Each structure stands twice: as C-alpha cells, then as structure tokens.
Image 1 (cartoon, protein in one colour):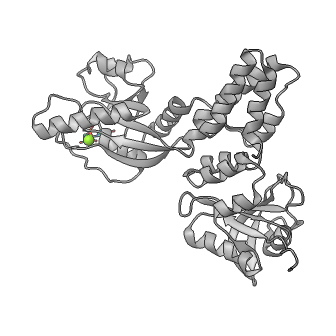
Image 2 (cartoon, helix red, strand yellow; image 1 turned 90 degrees about the horizontal axis):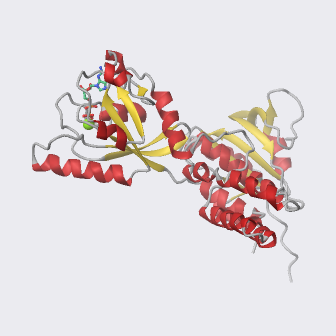
Image 3 (cartoon, rainbow, N blue to C red; image 1 turned 90 degrees about the vertical axis):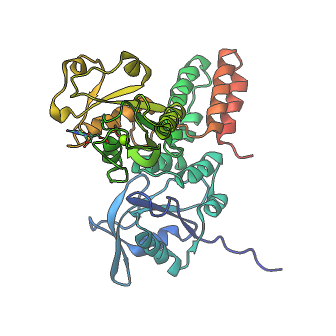
Length: 383
Ligand SMILES: Nc1nc2c(ncn2[C@@H]2O[C@H](COP(=O)(O)OP(=O)(O)O)[C@@H](O)[C@H]2O)c(=O)[nH]1
Ligand SMILES: [Mg+2]
C-alpha cells in the first residue's frame, strides 16, 4: 500500500483564452501562496504575501525576467485549509500561457477549468461560475462572474433573514432581479437593427462593431441579408444583427431579404429602430411604436422637427461616432435593466439558481418558510 498522495497544487486559466483584455488564473493548493510569493514583485515594494480581498499590483518575475504586469490577490476560500491565489494578467494567448508556465515550472499542475473546479469547488455555484466564466466575453462579465465564483451570491443567500420571512421575500426579489444581467453576461442576448432603407443601419452596425464588415452603400437596398456580429455594448456581450431595410420590395431577392430581416427582428431580444433623423420626411408612426428603442441617426446633419419631437429617441451619428456610447448604454439597460454594478455584489446567473429562488419566493408567499429555506439551500449546497 502506498501512502496517500499529497494534495497537488493546481493552476487553471478561468477566462476564455484570447478573448477580452484580461485573463484570470487561479492557483489552489498547499503551495499556492509560496509560489505566488516567489514569483510576484509588488510595485509598492511592500509585503509580497497577497492579502484577502486586496489586490496587489506588480510584476510577475521569473529568473530575473519580467513576465507580465499583474494584479494578484488571495481568494478568500471557504474550503478548510485550501490556499488560493488569483492572478489577473494580460489576456493574450501567449501572455497568459507564459504566466501559467511560471507556476507549472515550479511544480503546480496545469489543469483545465473543469478539472480545477472538480477538485476545488466548494459548491455548485462555484462550478457554475467557472463554467459561465468560460463564456464571459467582456471585462464586466469576468468581474461579475468572478465575484460569484468567490462567494458573493452564496454569502447573500446565507444571510437571508429566515427569522423574519417577510423580510426574506424582498431580498429574494432583489436577487432575482439580477438574473437577466447575470445570464446576459455569458449567454449573449440578441439585438437587431431595423428600420427603413438608407437610415444608416449598416453604418451603425459597423460603428458599434468597430470594424467594416458590412457593405455600406448610398444605393438603397444593398444589405441583402441579416448579418450578425458579437459586440460588447455597455459591458454586455451582444449578438448584434444588421438587417435589410423596410420598403416596398423591388425584386424577389429583396422581398426575401425583408422577410429575413423581420424574422431576425422577431428573434432578437431587442429591436433598435434606426431612423434617418435628418430626413425631412417623417417615417410612419407604426415603426416607432413597434420598436423597443429608437436611434435617430445622421444627427451630424441636424435633426428634422419630427425627430426632435420624438420622446425618448436617442440622437446618434454612425459616421461621426456621436452618441454611440449612450446608445450602447441604453441598449444594455433595455436588455437587463439599470442594474448597479458594485464590485462584490451578488448576482443570479443560471437558470437553475433562478428556478430555485423563484420557488423559494413562492413558498414564502404561500406561508411555507421552511420549504423556502430548503429551496435556497439547494442553490449552494453540494449534493
Ligand atoms: N451624414 C451621415 N450619413 C450617414 C450616417 N450613417 C450612414 N450614413 C450614410 O447613409 C447612407 C446609407 O447608409 P447605410 O448604412 O447603408 O444604411 P442602411 O440601408 O440603413 O443599412 C450611406 O451613404 C451612409 O454613408 C451618419 O451618421 N451621418
Ligand atoms: Mg444596410
């Protein structure tokens, strides 16, 4: 019989590789602090030992060579005796691999995120967060999902005031209200740009996607198909779809393009109506009524009186880039609500969590607090 193998120290890249500007590595196990202390040179010159919940900025130095600029912190681990360190580094494939290698050369074992979570996860929320992080394509997504991986949601659920069930209900409702944001951060919602031909939908699509992948043409009816791109809007990853314009079809091909545009708009979680706000001709009222959000494009040419009179419409210029950040923010708010984004905030981010918390709320309302509590505990308990 051999002696039990010592617990290995494992390292994994938890963010999707090659996406976004940042990458996050976790190193867990008995040697996690030792390795981090050996590799990390804090900029402040202070103690190298990473402290709980405090980020340390500095360099990762291996063999006298600066490998990367990093942020390091100790992850407050609920698991008994498990030391864990988080390293934030540059997100490029090469940079993050080099950082990982610094740890593996010194004896840590590099593992896939799934294997990492299987070994170290304290409960289902953490496993779900690791899975979701693999799909988080924006810094906001990484930030929020890391908070949940590190226990923000679990702490909020454990702190529910069961001695006063009447107070637990609003707390649950507040948590449930974060679910659209939580889900959208890793399961991108769809946004379609719709509206009349020549309003500037394709130009706006390009401006929001910040690259020229669409045909832009002064000839009406050029965009023949619905085309999508993954873009970050207001911190959310969004599947943005450009569509052919609405007008009387001049050909069967155009009729088909319009049919597809309508289908794309119907499938989308939000349709943004793009109008040429500089045009003297007022668009049909039914258009504005059908859309979730109205963008008055070509504001660089000045807005027509009808456009200025439209309530809640947003003036933008795809050509000059004016109003695009505001539009991105309005799109994000329309999709997930004006969710506040303080660091460390609890966010519900999977359908399983939502279902159990909705059930808990229903039980409280039915006067069954014990059943409610059991439903909540299922969210974070193993088993
Ligand atoms: N002045 C101005 N022209 C624009 C703007 N956005 C688009 N255009 C022009 O409007 C025309 C139609 O644009 P396009 O994006 O193809 O419209 P779509 O048919 O709605 O996709 C092109 O000539 C664009 O250069 C803008 O913000 N300002
Ligand atoms: Mg177009």
